[in-house]
Length: 103
Image (cartoon, rainbow, N blue to C red; front, side, top):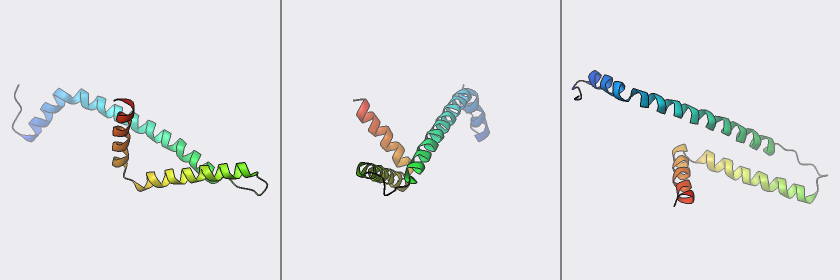
């Protein structure tokens, strides 16, 4: 079967032959987007709760240092992820994880 020469004929040809693959890919994309959104919400709530934790003068020195250290790490995390484009993050995670886990 040859590819039609007009635009709409090609579109119908592609959808007839590859439509199920497109639908499967769209379903997987939606699943990844939903899971990513849920994980992002959990991380965001956790960061927000920790960042708004009050510090009192009655806290011992270890607790003050621990809270300040955690808040500093979370500030760095937020600024890095806020300051870089999502595509750069995706490439870093994809290629970085492949270099770490799969020789």
